[in-house]
Structure formats: structure tokens, C-alpha cells
Image (cartoon, rainbow, N blue to C red):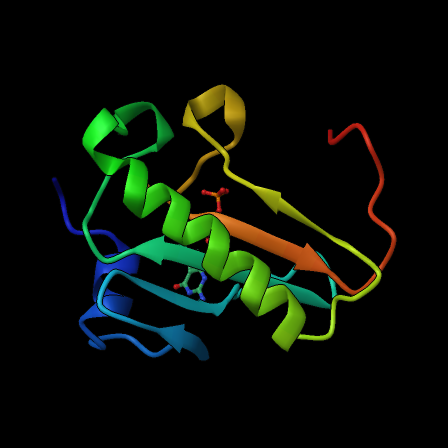
Length: 113
Ligand code: DGP
């Protein structure tokens, strides 16, 4: 898989506001926040997109969701939040490294554009 901006953030060759890190994943603040809290959670393993996830990735995907809920608590999103994974062109994915958006801190409209 080609290097993306997110692998460079994992390697710390470009800076990011890192909020959380463990052996499997990293969370950092989005450079272009769409809500008062907008954190991206990425696996360190470079999976291209949600469409590339395999059965064997189930524990990793579960871990990402659990960490997202813990970050939501830590970041004060007690009124609720949204967890989004954009996939492919029509899904609005712009970086080819699977990432989970955690958005909150305001009331979020539905449906998305
Ligand atoms: P998506 O459209 O779902 O692929 O979201 C990609 C997000 O990544 C988008 O909200 C902007 C964010 N992003 C892109 N480049 C960088 C970067 O260099 N640093 C950080 N922190 N976020 C980035």
C-alpha cells in the first residue's frame, strides 16, 4: 500500500495533535475539524479502506470502536457524538488509510450531505 499522510503521522515524520496511542491504533485531531471535537482514529496496520477489511480484522475493528467510545468520554462528549467511516469515492474518503471520525461538541444534522 502506498504511503499516506496518516502513515507519516504514525511514523511521526509529520506532526499531529495526538490524543491517544496504543500498539494497535492512534487518534489525533483532524486538521480540518467539522465540529468542536473532531478526532481521527486509525489502525497502525495500513488497511486501505473499510472495503478492504477482512474477517481476521474483526478484533482490530472492535478495538477501534471501543477506543472511540473511551475518547468520547475523555473529550467530554456526554451529550452524544457521531462515529463515521467514509469508504471510497462515493463515501467521501480522501485518505487511503482506514480512519474513524469521532465528531461531537455540537448537535449534528442528519442526513449527511
Ligand atoms: P475522509 O474524507 O473521510 O477521507 O477524511 C480524511 C480526513 O483527514 C479529513 O477530515 C481531513 C483529515 N486530514 C487530511 N490530512 C491531514 C493531516 O495531514 N493531518 C490531520 N490531522 N488530518 C488530516
